[in-house]
Length: 452
Ligand code: ADP
Ligand code: CIR
Image (cartoon, rainbow, N blue to C red; front, side):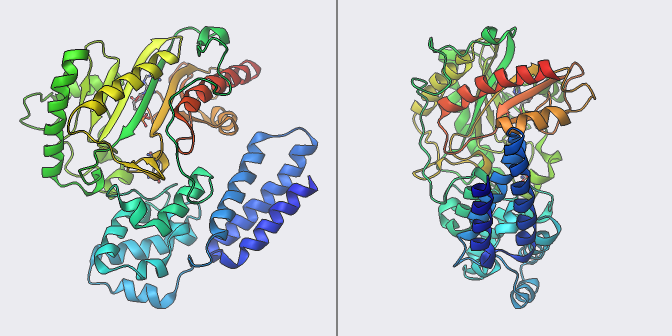
């Protein structure tokens, strides 16, 4: 235990010279608080939640400790320089991201923003970079706070993004993501290879696996013009014609005047049926990133004949490709998605944006790598007895699980205590490990629900 504490303290001391004032204070308090808690946890049985807090604090320290040539402090002369910028967008963005460093220390983009690095960029790159961080500047309460505008931004603005990614995903800077859907040999996979929910005493559940994908030859959604969005939708309609041969179904477009246009009522029914995404213009994080611009132009979804294979067009990523089914074997949606993805990728002219380091490139750094979210709708009436997901979230966090509402992110839980459960990790994890982690997470959560 003393070793743990010494280690934490040593790392904190090493990092101290490179920490920005506000972030440094928060990290110091967080790390010492968590380290002290860990000593308790180790004495009285490990409380994974406290250990998680320590890990978070340490990973932040490590990300910051790597900052010898990367200064995150705010220089008054540079602030004055950019507040007078002739570009009002840049002036406003820079003033706000610097202010967020003190007002919202958990905004990762604000914490890791370097005004000196920004100052070293050409005026054109400064504008491009400001677009990447504007969501976190305008929404100081952001957790992540940035979105890439072009597939190449993660490399182009490497000094910033590599730190943000290392910090959020808790991996050393520069760690390479490896794509691997092969379940064989993955820890936690039952001997027969079936991730069978009946073994956990569960009935058939609603299961879904989605991946985010972007086309290599378009700007990412935050930088697309209305014309780009229309062209991309048109291109995808050509692909859907091919998919219809194999999977049946149809495309539903929100673009006024589109041959597959659906009205408001049809759109709402698709959202209610979990097949279509919500109105993005209501999401200020996406709106300030430019991702929701031109809504609803170029937006829509392809739904297969049996309703179980769906492709969203024009949400946070160009494409969100998913398989959904009510059933008991998680492999069913996982395997079907792999097959469907291979089919989509084999269509001529569709090349997904991919990076040797970051795997599949997504708008949000949180989704990089696999772009995968694997979820089930699970009833947890005991853990949600108070009508909120607070307790469920507290139990799920140390299990590496995220809790969402019945309508997805930022929506309420079901009246019967049904929640959306998914592994939080996306980057530097194999696809096969995500689906296995979901199975293992469900089994642990079922036990917690019984105890609650
Ligand atoms: P994403 O999963 O793409 O990040 P959301 O969390 O907003 O986005 O969810 C999108 C939609 O998918 C919502 O309607 C949500 O209820 C639905 N959904 C997610 N998981 C499941 C599931 N296991 N079964 C049914 N619908 C699901
Ligand atoms: C934030 O920074 O809090 C928001 N931009 C959302 C981050 C989570 N990512 C996501 O939903 N894809």
